[in-house]
Length: 118
Image (cartoon, rainbow, N blue to C red):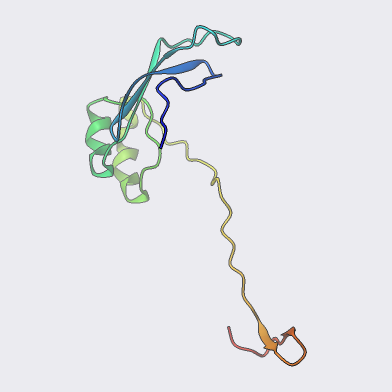
């Protein structure tokens, strides 16, 4: 598999340092055509969910995404540190399809039958 060390970037930041499985450091993309970012850099780290609360208590992060709902009570207590829980709309739709009926092999048809148990 071929890997690139110079990815094409069109956003306000470009990768500076990648530590596989741990973190990605970004710096300002000097070729970005839009408004210059107000930050000099961004660091995205992978963290074990069990360490989220202690990391927030130590002010190690500004933003945490993808935590589990069981952490909510502890994170809620950190409002005094300036944190806010904003939530996020789901980015996917979960759909369940039920085949209510049966297949008639002689006619090659799916027959709807509301009496067929799901």
